[in-house]
Each structure stands twice: as structure tokens, then as C-alpha cells.
Image (cartoon, rainbow, N blue to C red):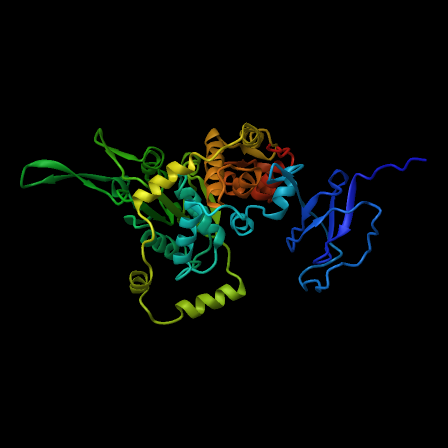
Length: 426
């Protein structure tokens, strides 16, 4: 009598003893545990479920062997490790964690990878942790995009941007957004010259290459509107005269999510100008101890930046790297995968407004840059999975019912992406 083939196979991880569950079609394939990242072969269903781990190492205290977790199966197609099955397998291992892709990637030592490593090494001299924030900002920089950073006060957002400006060798400018800030305070305005009896345009603080828009949500919509043309077209129009900005041009805006007094929600048109919305969280215990040791003295921070930080690149090299990243190959199947994700956000019942085509462009550009930093000249679905939450979380709006229920945009997006089949590239 024939025995029915089970739909799923459950087995313990040889490293941490966590219960892993995958589809039966993956028997014999390589799979990675989402907890300890141990790559193992999926056994046949005849293997006892209560078998002991074969590894001599003890399970980590923070891991519970009784928990069952989906894992990321990998199949090898023409020498490229590729995710297989639904997007749930990709997101379960590194949901929105951009830096995790870099740590596990063993790509070629390309110019983009070398430059990222040099920049990251300089940043770590004064800025501790927040790896996803650092990598996400650099991906946006080398993709020609902009970044919105959201976090509670005191996590070093301003320090990070100041440090980045010194490392990149770019002109750095800062705008402290307040309730009385006017559009002309950003763009500049004509000033009457008493000497020659003519009006002369005096450039505003946006005429820079790395702009920190600090506490951007403290200004009203009319002030935000001054940034729309600047961020999209890299130019300023005042009194009918257009003034071009120098490349590269990166806007890094910050906002505080816990205060509502004296703040204004950013308009959807403004949010859509940002390539990524990155979330900065509290550091770990070890990282916070390093922060206290590094910055606990009475040293002047500006002096440290001038003495310890050196420029490792230049605007010309950044522009050349951005053009080079545009040559990274995107398979038509991957284009279709991105398109399906973006279009599905417009049909998801909990979303009142879905993502625009600009979101799909951001995913393609970001996937190319992330692949180049990983040392590859081709993008894979995992590159998209790493940046899908930062690229979409600020471009969708919850319905009133979903807001009342307290649902999370990130969790809803994760559920949405799990329904999209991940392509197998050849």
C-alpha cells in the first residue's frame, strides 16, 4: 500500500537544535537555519523528529529547540545560490536587514565593494553599530536616491551624516527645520545689491552635495514643497531662473516618531521622493558600552572629526561608481518579480494607497547597487528582499480600519511579499 507523501518535512538544526520546517519538495537540497545560519541538507521524512543534534556544540541559551521556524532553502543554478519557493523563505532570514546580505556574501573584490569597505571602516572610527542605516544610506547614495531616517532622539543620526560628509569629500550642508522656516530659507532668494542697483541671487543651503534635513517634520507643507523639485530634478527654480545643483546630491532627512506636538506629517508627494525610509533602533549592550567608551570624554566632536576622519573618496569617484552600478544585470524574471510586488500593494485590502511606479524604480536601482557592493555584476531576488521594506514602508498608507486595529505597515508588507513567487534565475 502506498503511503501519502507529506507536504512538509520537520527536522532539528544540527547546530542549534531549533525545529526547522520546509516543503517536502526540498528534500536533499541545501537550507539555512534563520537562527544560527547553519547550512544543512534537508533530510528525508523517515528521519526521526526527536533525533539529537549531530554537532558537538551546545545549543545557544537564547535559542529554544522546541520552536519551529521556516528556513531559507537554497538551490544552486549555474553556480549562483538562489532562493527557491515563496518570498517567505527569503524574508524569514533577513527581513529588512540590509547589512546581513553583505556579511554572508562572498562576492568578487570589485571597486564598489572596496569603496564600501573603506567608507565603512572610516565611519566605525566615531559611529558605532547601525549597520543597516549605514549600508542603506550608501546604497541610496550610489543609486542617486535620498534617505529618510526615523528614530528616537540621541541615536547619532546627525553624527552619522556629519561623519559621512567628511568621508565622502563632498560639500556638507545642514538645515534645521522649524515651524517658521520659509521656502526661500531653503532655496535662496534674490537680494538687492546696492552697489550695482541690481538683484542678485543668493544661493540657499540646498546648494551642497550632502544635505542634512534635520527634524524635517517640524515645518509645514509649504516648506516641504520647496524640496520637491530639488530632490527629483536636482535643480532650483527661483523667479523663473533655473539653477542646477552639483552631483552627487544626497538628502538625508530625519524625523522623530514619538512627538506630535509642533510637527507636521510629510505629504505623500514628499515621502515618495525618498528612496528609502530607514529605522534606527537602540544599540545592543556591547555597542552601547563602546559608545560610552568612545564618546564619554570631554572632547570636542568637531575636533575629532577633523583629526580622526579622512576623506576616502571624491564626488567624481561617486559619480563614476553610480554610473558603473547602473550596468549591473537585471534579469527579466526579476523585473517581473519587482513589478508584481509593487502592483500588489495597490490591491492589498489593508492599504488605502499603494506604491507608485517610482517604488519599482527604487527597488531596481537599489538591487543593482546592493549587488555591486556584494561583488556581483548581476542582481538576485535576495537583493530585492533586503531592500523591499525600506523602499515601500513610506509609500503605502493604511486604511482607517487597519490604523484603528493598530496593524503594522512592515508586517502587512511582509505578509504581502510572502504571497509572491520568487523566480529562479538561470
